[in-house]
Length: 271
Length: 188
Ligand SMILES: [Fe+2]
Image (tube, rainbow over all chains, first blue to last red; front, side):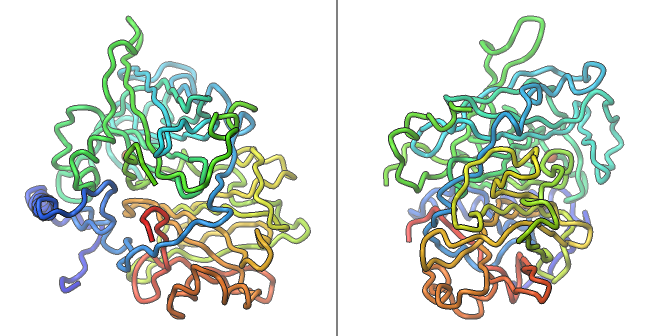
């Protein structure tokens, strides 16, 4: 790395500078694609437009490992861990949170299309004004006393999850001057194997902030980015109640050879 | 292996997971002070050698006898069921500590290790790694992953046993002594 290391949170650059870096990286990727390089499906961990990543990404390439015993299984979660009401983010306080009420539904699948049953899904998000309940969130938007923005559920036998929440607002951050994150919901997911563990973010269709956001853009492939965008589904929208969004998640793998029982999803049924 | 679906991309955990992911006794796989309990502890550093205050570390391990357990209840610990899984945020000084037991060898002659996942603001995707117990040098010598690494890299994956019986293991996301991070998904 020839350049001096930039301070990670200095907000020294403006959007035009960051957007140019984003564009340059994307052009490089497109050129590589047309030269026959394979499409990238994950974010770049070395992605300088996201300033905090500069000192926090490994510079040596990840080392290939064949997963061993413990890595071929996943921690187990069940209804001792998560109460059914934790999937409803609108009833955690005395009153209704402000904002657009929304139902969010989808499935957790493995790379072979098998449902990931009986597994933990955790979400967190800003409120409708774009503010998190977190001491480090200094955005001068109002907190909502009726909204914490945290939910959990256990997937059903078909890998399905469902949350009732409110649509989060966009919010500013200090990556660069006038940096704003597109509205998103953070997701944490487990598979049937430790190697499938993933944390990600779900976005909303048509957000004008997509081209400007270095976190979204750290995924350089447009098809891959699209996999993080929920679909509005009017059939899931309930009259005079809530808008409906749908988003499926696909995990890597599996690596383990499955027994017949597991393949039919019995693992998740018996709790 | 045929893959019908392309995996969803990861994204950074960001700075605001504090109300969502940490939970009471997240780092206590066994109650502190219980027989055979050991601490696994260390510090998470960035490429300047500065401790990172907003990382999250998860471990997943076999029990003392090398059995992979499938007990639920990690998020609401009952105080006696060993679930094998823990999660703890690094503190303001980048330090983390788990109270657990030494994992046993999952097969005779195998080197016991903890599977580890690391998340942080600024880290685009989670990182996987392992931390091995230092004792069984013969098993460590034979281990497939360790023997594929140069000695200087190998030692980043082996915990140090301190005089008090605890295991010390630092995580370096970048730099000279960068921890070895693992890719399970590409073909060898
Ligand atoms: Fe966020």
